[in-house]
Length: 251
Image (cartoon, rainbow, N blue to C red; front, top):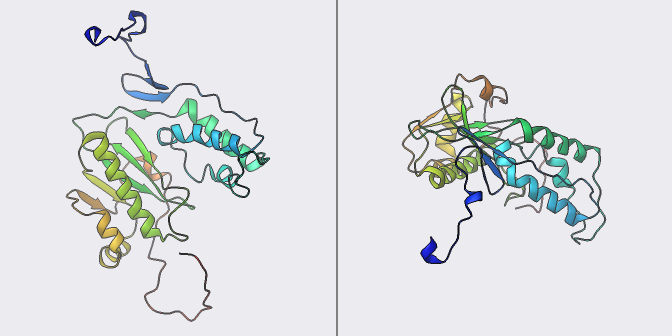
């Protein structure tokens, strides 16, 4: 290092945990963000964008979903001028409170090389999201996976959202560890799972080259069963229905 003309300050060398690196506090087993200063004095659209940028930096670690930030995302709609006046309503302030509560109380774990990775698709009311984890005692939470708040299509079907989460999670895990998931838990009924295999090209593409186990049975972990709504059957009909037909200009 010295021969390259670089100098390492001895007082900045960290030898024991927690190590501080790029805004993170890395402990022996867990990682948490360093204390964040969330700016709540919102005056214009630029302030809202800066606020969401700060939250996006830690949301995959803290498990802050799109639903939790829904009111803040709504604040971005309307006038696109960064100087346009903007303020936070009661729902947006409540969203900020969720973030403030999560920062000191949530964390992720450093992954264990000897353990396989698992993925579970959680299906809350508004929008599904996923969790990368390793089975251990205690459970090792590695990272949360969320869909984009601005999808490329006006309407996404449920099985498309499941598929996009699987694709995104598999790509992320390969980047992190170079391996694929040993288990993927998609908590639907067996009938729905068979329908996905038979009817959804997107779902088949999401599982291309996957050699692990895909199951519709929930793992026996209390934390993962808390945020789950069973999907009983596809909400799409292959035959025309006796109902009002509505045309839209959406893609």
